[in-house]
Image 1: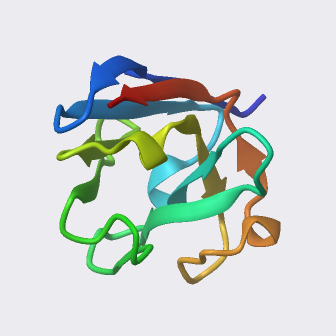
Image 2: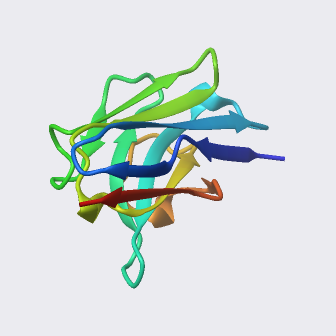
Length: 124
């Protein structure tokens, strides 16, 4: 059974940092491209960042470029999202997702496995 478990969310102030983790089990982690998505209240889920199986290709949404960094440790079967200079508009539930497809993707339909999400709240 595939499980993706996010952690590291919380309530922070504008300008603070957080690091999210996504621990995977039940799948060959190194064979999956991974992604972070988020969904704010009343809004559609959106892609935040993605990383290829071998870590050599990454994608970032324009809204987080220069502030967020995606990474992964295939030996630990864990993906990370370092979030710096957080803004109130970053407030959302953050989800990690995995796809065995050959490419990274910013489209949620391309991902087969999803975590339950972790809440990030940024106060002004």
